[in-house]
Length: 130
Image: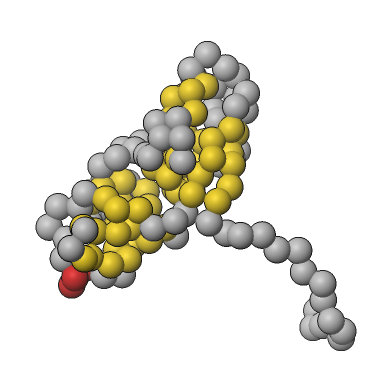
């Protein structure tokens, strides 16, 4: 329905969040984090992963815990990555993750998209999260 008066909106920054970690999962700091349909954090190559959430700001070791026993702090800030063959012509191209730290420009076997090439400079390739 169209607004008929001012709307007070609840907001938050969109570049950080924390997610409950799936039982038996170890997520290393600085690696990509995916989510299951139930909202549990897993590695991107986990069988139940449905979307990449961002990258882990620190290690989250739930190896011995149950679902959601701990949370992982996830960021969507731009991240410098190793991406073979990428140059400035790839800016805005999709970037896929084969696992928590292997990035590629092609989606060979159903990998999740981590984001796009944000830019390429003298420091390397920068991943812009979705």
